[in-house]
Image 1 (cartoon, rainbow, N blue to C red):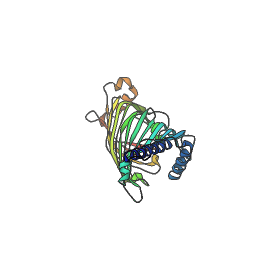
Image 2: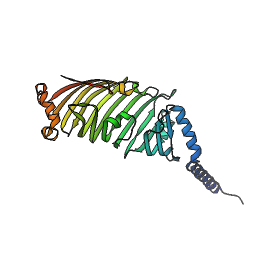
Image 3: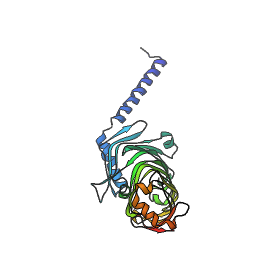
Image 4: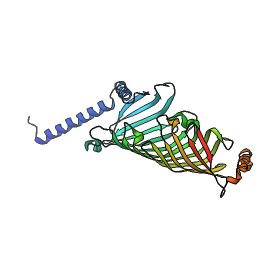
Length: 298
């Protein structure tokens, strides 16, 4: 019995369909242990100063990976994680990959919020020059370490914002980074008391600036909704040891009408310096380093 051309075409399509489903099932059911071991080894080779651990890794569609229980810590302090994510994923745009400039999309659930964005490779040879955008939504800063100990030691609140980066991954601080961040319902804690204050609560703190060649230029930093309102501009020269980064900030501090009742000790300090208050504002320059801030009255 001879099959018609139409029957042969149908059989061919069935074989192609079965082949596609087989590849799809193999992809989705790829052994997670082997994948986990491979990615852990690659991560340790790429970031030798960090311990990187996962609970589980799997493949996703569109092409990518999903990670459960991601934990990152410094080799020096393996028991103190600096980044913990309940669930993360990384996906690649197939079209961008075919064009030779892969774009990766990522999401990460962390500290009650989400970090998401994309990273696009620009250098076709070294694969180091990238453009990246990071969006932060509802991330809770508290007493648990996040990224760097100085963050949880000095700041609390709910963080949102966007960071964009263009540069070389081998030395990201020498790239060009734009920052726009907002911290709400929080407080800032001072290592050395300022105006007899150990900490200062606020409703909103916003900052915009640019990091260019290891220098953070703060366009505007504003803090409102607390016993005092503050604004600042200036620069931070970022050091490899972050706490030794040098400050050159100019600030204006404006007490709220309720300050003298709610915080009488601060009110007394303000009264002592009332001859330096102009237009209702006290002007202070902050120099020194992040670890050793030196305030100077103007």
